[in-house]
Length: 461
Image 1 (spheres, helix red, strand yellow):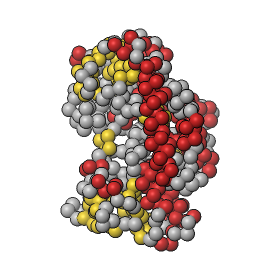
Image 2 (tube, one colour):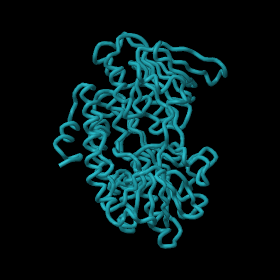
Image 3 (cartoon, helix red, strand yellow):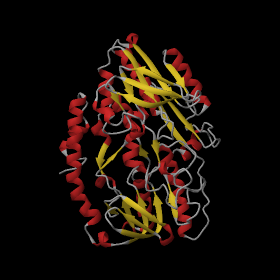
Image 4 (cartoon, one colour):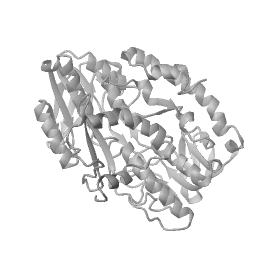
């Protein structure tokens, strides 16, 4: 047997060995997933379904948004009427990479074959989206296939742009530099951290929208905790440079984080944007956004880079995007503002909320209802309030669980002050949420904590 339940995959997934072994494990997982995907893709695409050029619902993207919506649409219109376009052979649970970069989880535990997470019976078109033609209800793939649809769900995520920082991505060939935002570089973060000797430990935030906006500082707190645990903290100058004018977007949680920053002697420089990495010299160059033209060079012993991010290239310049290139949807219903049979979910949209897996969960419940109403020729009636969540990992056993809405107002699930560091919340982040992801969200069974919040707060917001 091959795949996530085979002996090899179980063994490497449970591996907590040193990063060298984790890298070998990740490669073995990829090979295992490829074999598994070949076998399982027969289930998804080798029958008459693969020959179809038209589907009632076409889903673009096989990340968290795409898989959960494919599962939900399968139950609505039948598996034979749903297809998903996705080129990748491996699907990753990316939120766990924060802990991988800190040595607390293995990278192998974050991945499963794409074939294993696509709902059974749903057609997998293993290609990239090349072009949209919403006027004719069709999508073109890079393999030359033209697929038509009755309803289109765009869930293409976003793109990382390391190349927009001078010296990257080639700088990752050097030691002492890593990034938790890519499977190719996340273990480099851990290598840099565990081999830290003395000097500056730099952590950056880009001057663009990002997915999981708390992640760039989570690794800072974890690095601080690791250096304290290993007796190196007195030799480290920990610096977090961000182009933003604040530490976190929601005041309640920002205030709590500032207290941690002061207590742990962390250095925060606001309005500082990374523009160059000189990895051979262990130098990073930042521009001061409050003083145009002024730059400052920082020497580093280690650096964690959060890359600039942007909308999928295929969306930019299409008739589906807004002025910035993001999918242009109604923020309440997730229906496209121009094309009534097109919908969006997740990181690729212009929804004015933080781009997180928690947001995807809440959006999926709303979009499920929106599509149901449209299928019945009815007006959408369920409204997305912008709910999103960011488990702010502050050490190897504590988390501040930030939850908020479009207006940046706390929208907390539990009847406690979630701005306080919590061990329970850490275990929820590290142990429970991965299970909820694989067995709840990707199955189309988890639509966020809204109903539970109502119960926890006795019906009061």
